[in-house]
Image 1 (spheres, rainbow, N blue to C red):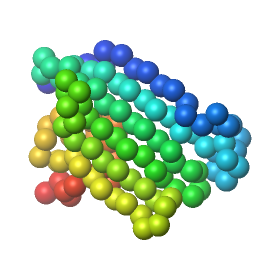
Image 2 (image 1 turned 60 degrees about the vertical axis):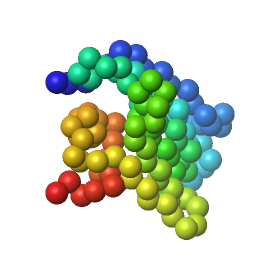
Image 3 (image 1 turned 180 degrees about the vertical axis):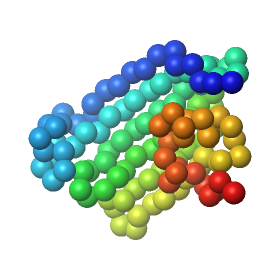
Image 4 (image 1 turned 45 degrees about the vertical axis):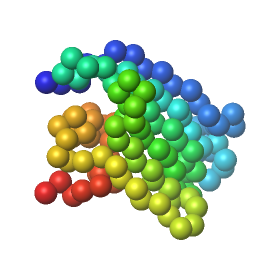
Length: 115
């Protein structure tokens, strides 16, 4: 069974966003994205909440919801010290793997190595 996208929403959280200054100039792209989708007859919501800072590093939370209940979440923070790498998704979950294949997740979002 594959994911069927129902709706996408995105809001830019950085009022100073400027594509010409996304690396070191303060114009970092910091989206809040919600994607509503259907998988195996159930409706889910996937949220990316980014406050990444260009060359200074990634800082985001990715959360998977079903009926407003958190099913999985990853928190990645390369900006603050100490760095946080808290992947909460699993390669053992077919939905999580499909989210990876569709580009919603990266390998760093997983708590296991896929073996």
